[in-house]
Image (cartoon, rainbow, N blue to C red; front, top):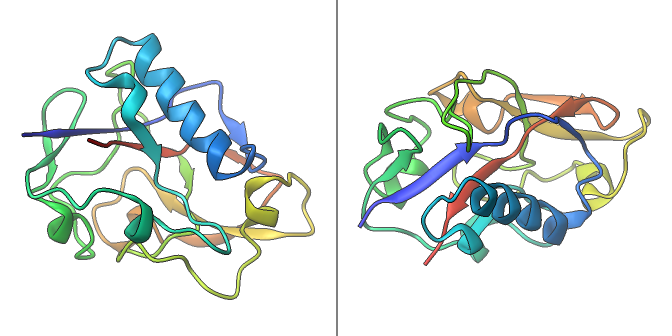
Length: 162
């Protein structure tokens, strides 16, 4: 079994994603709109002050692949090892995109501490910060890039779930 992942295409979002629920909705909506398999079963790779991918996502034993079929990681352990086989730089529309990605998440799938997560992804102003990743990266920067202001725009990573 293969698990599809993508980075959201335009329109790009600000950090007010509507919380984790809103981010998950964005993934499901975009996957369903593009007729991806199991479109209603996608979740966002984002952490809040209380929730993180390692605790809420399926730890797949099979490969994570882009919409175009290119393998990103052999399984959950490889996905959270700190190095990807290929960047998560393909959108739900099967097009390339190199962009800042809202994550708040370390390479292990755990939330990054000591950050505001843009008030748990409900805040867009410049007086709070969050961690963003880089969709062109295959090292730790894919999810733990830099700390940035919440007023910027970017995308989110979406991962198929069972």
